[in-house]
Length: 333
Image 1 (cartoon, rainbow, N blue to C red):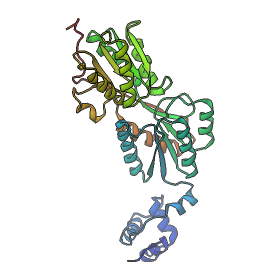
Image 2 (image 1 turned 135 degrees about the vertical axis):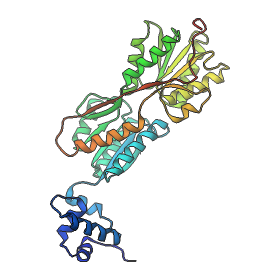
Image 3 (image 1 turned 90 degrees about the horizontal axis):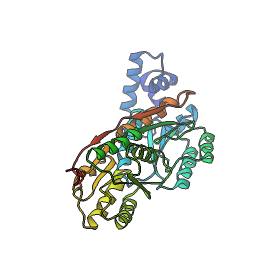
Image 4 (image 1 turned 90 degrees about the vertical axis):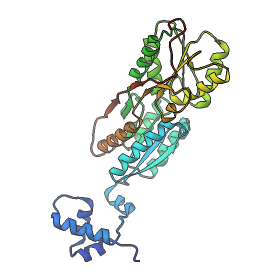
C-alpha cells in the first residue's frame, strides 16, 4: 500500500489544482460544494493524513492544547480531562495531559515545556493562587490560557460556583442541627478551596466552625481527621471536607477510630465523584459539573485564541447530592 500521500496526489486524482485541494481540506470559503465533495472523497480513498507539523509552520497553529492538572489521582480531574478531550477532539485538536502533582514549581515547568511545543493554548488548574511572578511569566509566553480556578488577573477562568457550594453545605448541616463542625481542606491559599471555606464559615454561626488546612488528598484528609478526633473525640458532630478525595480519607480515619458515619459524625464532601455513591455509607456531597468544566474551558480557550479578546469568566452552578453520610445531631433527632 502506498504511503506518504500528498495534496499533489489528491489534486492529480481529483483533476484540480493544489490550492483548491488545500482550501477544500481546510474548509475555506469560496470552494464549490461539488468540488469540495470530490476532493474529500479522493482524500478519503487515498487515506490522506494531513502533516500537522508542516501545516503548523504555515498557519502558526499546532492544533494541540495542554491541560495541566494538580493531582491525577483525584477522580474529579479524570472527568475534567474527559470533557476537555471531547471538546478538543471535536475541534480537531489533540490534548496533552500534564500532572503537576501539587507542585507549583513543576506546574510552571510544564507551562514552559508546553510553550516550547507551540501548543495553541493551555488549560490549568493551579495548585495555589498565582503570585505576581507566576502571572507575569504566564503573560509573557503569549499563549491563550484558561484557569480552572478563579484567580484575579488577565486570564480567562472557568470554575464551579464554589461560594454557593460552601453555603449549601453549611445550610444543610444547620438544618440537621449541627453547631460544632470542622472544615478540613487543602492549602490556605487556593482559589476553589478558599472560596468554599470562606462561604461555609460565613454561613455558619460565629465560633461554630474549626478549620484545618492540609493536603487536599486522601492521605491529607485522613491525617487531618486523625488530628481532629484525637483533640476533640466527642465535641465535633459533623465534618465538611473541601473535596471528595479529602472526605474519603476522613471516612477512613473515622472508621479506624471505631466511630460510625453518620451516627457519631456526619460527613459531607464536594465534587460528587463516582466513588462517592459506592463507599459505605454513600457520601453526601456538593455536585460540581466536572465534565462540563473541562468542555467549557476548551471552548473558551479556542474562542479567545481566535481574536484579541478580553478575559472570559464562567461560573457553573452546583447543587447538593443527599445520600447517607449525614444525619441529625442526637440533640435534634
